[in-house]
Amino acid sequence: MKGGINRLLGFAMIALMCVCMWGCSDDVSFEWERTRRNAKVVGFVDDSLVIVGDYRFWLEVTDSWNGEHLEESGAGNPRLCVYNYRVQEDGPRWCDSVAERNNSGWFGGQLTDSVIWGGDFTAKMRMWKIGEQPHEIALARRVEDGCTGKFKITSIKQWLNGTFIARGDKSLNVEGDGCQYAVLDTLARTLTFKRLEKDYEWLKECDDVRAWGDDVYCVILDDEGENSLVLKNKNDTISVPRKFAIGGFWGNMIKMNGNICLFEDDNISCSDVTWRGNELKFYRNGVVVVKY
Image (cartoon, rainbow, N blue to C red; front, side, top):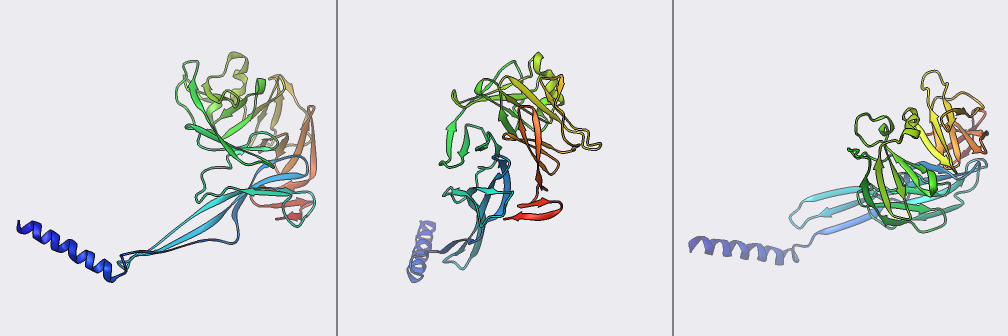
């Protein structure tokens, strides 16, 4: 009985303190940074337009009624923009943003020449098409061919019969019964993990892969000797205009070191503008010609 009385007295004291301190309310302030940061290239539309994603950082300060001072920060309000990278312009050709407080993975990579993908693919994926509002679609995840070990998706490119091929950083050459790639069907809303069929086992050596129509293309990188290859349907080697050590497919473009090249009808033609891959600066003959 005595303990119960003491508890009641304690609650009464707290209530009285809250009344004296205007209800124990916290003072909370939230502010977005005016400028945007963490801009990165997420795709190339063609031989003159580049797709860029960025964020705004925020700070929330809480001064609690009990004297505690708390600060929380983060990044959100993701924005997608399109810039001209051959000619310096005042700003982007187009921009739109998502009104969300926290960044939740909108800029995973380039799906097509005008669509960016994102999300963690546990149940949904995100797609953002230039000129349109972004949206999410629910996905059913499946496993075929008895493979095991779903992987983290780091690349999605166009594939056969209107589908997309999804892979992880090293998934294509996984041995044993591990899943090597997945087929994304956006119409059926399915993501099916698989092992490479016999006709496509040659893709194990590829660092990037995609299809144009009924043909499958592969980039095999030589990081040291810069003797990288672009293959078509396993046996045909596409002639390239220069040696390169790093690169891959970006929409209908292909990146070779710092060179941004158009890949059309099995011909590769490179722009005279280069990009070093870590900032929004584009060069011609070593001189910055476009900067955002």
